[in-house]
Length: 297
Ligand code: PAF
Image (tube, rainbow, N blue to C red; front, side, top):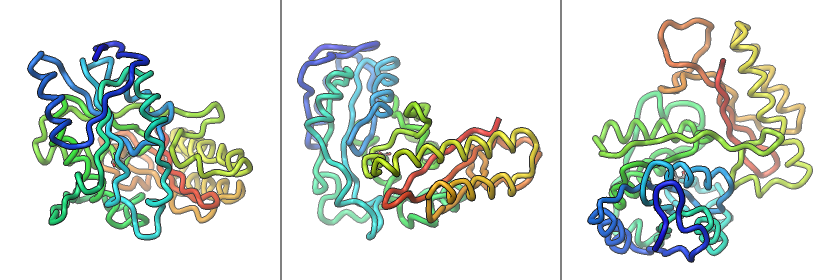
């Protein structure tokens, strides 16, 4: 195996671990050599956004592990678990070219052996609003699988995309609350030239829907601009909801302004010393559920 900090193997076949024991064995070997380790948890169907997480890992650690696991516990009964794109061979080739050092691709039975009953739940404002009411159980599924991945790999650094901002805050809170000895890093959203945030689920969009989807980041950016300019918050959010409906989105699940760290709703201008606000939205376009977020100011 070659590669290291600042650039990996770039083309060699990528070693894969299918079991926790194999993952731990490889990481143990790296630790014995004094190497630092980054983990990039994914569900596969990798795009440039994921590869930017790998680059970030390579920039700060000697070895980068990428996990691909379509986690059943974070999907609701009527969600897209069975149709979620699975393309491991293609993903492995992309990861090898990006310089990752190890693919961890466990089975569902390896991750959740018969008899598993433990769930990690992050409470408070982190899981009260935004996506949480629309996806009951989702964040418990995410927190549980991420806690397991962190304990299986024991990385120095774990990297998540900012597109899933609520997920990132939930994971940060969990790592702090459980004293996990890992640095959680959020990486900027990678966007297509028309502004749409890259997502594995964009593959579900028809060509017509894909063109309409450009209205999504535009509506959020415009609401953020108005709020940063001092406009009242609710009318700016209502205009964004209207813009999405006019572009063919429906239902629009939410367009909200919330505290960037705690995710508590922000309903009025001014607000003392809370963290900067962000605009958050989820809306359906045909059968595809899109989410995105945008900084205010
Ligand atoms: O963002 C994702 O792809 C997933 O939610 C994650 C963090 C890999 C957990 O399954």
